[in-house]
Length: 245
Ligand SMILES: *[C@@H]1O[C@H](CO)[C@@H](O)[C@H](O)[C@H]1NC(C)=O
Ligand SMILES: *[C@@H]1O[C@H](CO)[C@@H](O)[C@H](O)[C@H]1NC(C)=O
Ligand SMILES: *[C@@H]1O[C@H](CO)[C@@H](O)[C@H](O)[C@H]1NC(C)=O
Image (spheres, rainbow, N blue to C red):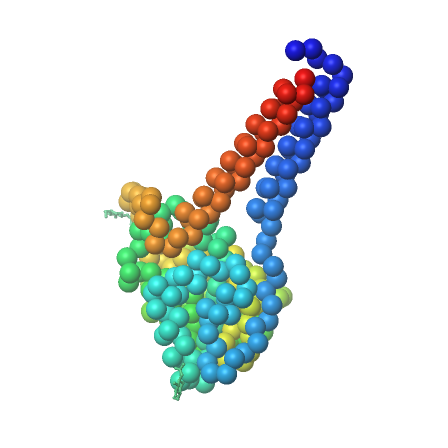
């Protein structure tokens, strides 16, 4: 094979195209979801899973709400109370940053408690977090030490939630209609009662193949398909180059 200037130009062009494409794949894979649109309220009690579905970055939380039947419970409660509800909705990205296997290792009861820990039994507008007394009560149960305490601090417009294990800012408002407030959080709120582990305790083993949430498996195969796609493109580039030289 003779190395000509044309060949070298071609290598550069193809390499550039390849890396440009790789860059595009990576940035598009990381691109944040679209900004949540305010959901028009249908008649009857607001449906948390429908509102979250429109915001399109809460798939794992929606699945958890449904599988634990907390979504039905919320629908019934919102229909029968004037107190309203406040929900802290973790994004899919928040769930993906949990330790591998952590969700799968929870039993049904813990799963329900984890979801209810993200629900406050009253409507709390953003401006009212400043007057809430700590620890805040959630629907998961007792807010005493080692149970389900959730503390809130405010600094200017920043509202921060602290569980004793995790610290998360309220990152956006999905819904605030006077009855149902839904706020986006960047981290799964991990209650002490469920996640406080003694460091000598063995980490829960992940259970591959048995995806109860479905989320992790889907994300991994998506990452894999991006990898395969780029590999295919590299092979194509090299083949094109060899054929043309
Ligand atoms: C809401 O409450 C009304 C009256 O109490 C009842 O007729 C209706 O079926 C309830 N709707 C839901 C979705 O629970
Ligand atoms: C929450 O706040 C209460 C009262 O200020 C405090 O006693 C408790 O230690 C705090 N807990 C966490 C987890 O921050
Ligand atoms: C960790 O667990 C072991 C055995 O269950 C217990 O003896 C020990 O006191 C625990 N340590 C802490 C810091 O909780």
